[in-house]
Image 1 (cartoon, protein in one colour):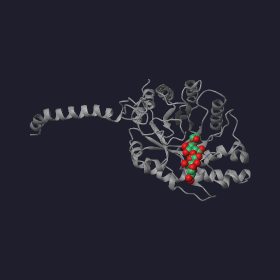
Image 2 (image 1 turned 135 degrees about the vertical axis):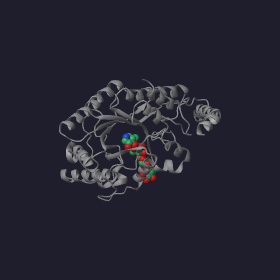
Image 3 (image 1 turned 90 degrees about the vertical axis):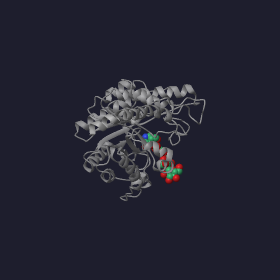
Image 4 (image 1 turned 120 degrees about the vertical axis):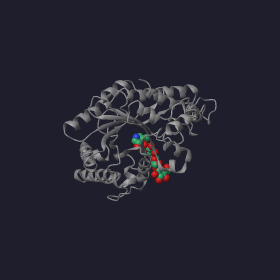
Length: 363
Ligand code: G3I
């Protein structure tokens, strides 16, 4: 009986499947914008792909992700629909909500409400979460910035902050930027409030406290200015080797990649390969690409090529696990007037979107 039904219905089903297939082929054309609506003469994305995370995972990476702030997806439905689309984004980073000034505004007084909103977004969507960050010299509460602390007091403060923060999100964070921007451009240690009290000892203290609080989270040191070869990259690589040799828990390096269109650092690919030799993973953690000057068709095309170059460099090194953009739209990007992101002010895809696809499909 079922065989007869199957025979009777096979032609009809085939027709339906054929129609669905052709619809599926057409759908991406509906969503790919031919031109940025804010600047109708400029080209938009021509990509025919379903999503950047889907393409990145197909290329063998763990995720393609974005940073975000809660008001952006809570107040902006169009933005919300994009960030909730796991074919676009498989990973979320709080751009601000987990930083010290918000999570421990007064000594020992922790507030996780803002961070929890970002955590809930990732959790509800099944997206990986990167924690950002435990120890940074910016966005600190006044009690840290204006305080005077002995060596032991500061070690206790760092351990308590990292342990409590990482512990609150135990089991929910793929990787933590435990240490953020600890080096100067010449590769020496930055003389921040933590260094001034403890020398570089706050770094292993923070990493150990984070490991104890969540043994399964990957622990990263994250920095900018380490995209190309040079003193700072060498210094960070040496720091990772030293930490490893001393048995300090360190699992990864975040290469931020806040870059300028047409000015990619020299030795970027070689440098990514060097980081790949360290025996830890690494990730592009804060990618954006600021345009200097007018937003011309040429500038957008160069931006596309530069996005492709960075993503392709990650693709070529197995230790590079994924790429995160530091928000995905010029509407909310932190660089005023840089038009640094892959969707424009009107939440239309730019050529840079295609650049990410090109990068992931470059091998
Ligand atoms: O929280 C206050 C709010 O109370 C106030 O009403 C408002 C008025 O301007 O300011 C809010 O603080 C702002 C905060 O972002 C949250 O929106 C700060 O002024 C603003 O300076 C801050 O900027 C952040 C910046 O870090 C601080 O250095 C950016 O959003 C954030 O994207 C950026 O992220 C950093 C990474 O953490 C580390 N790597 C570099 C990257 C870009 O600078």
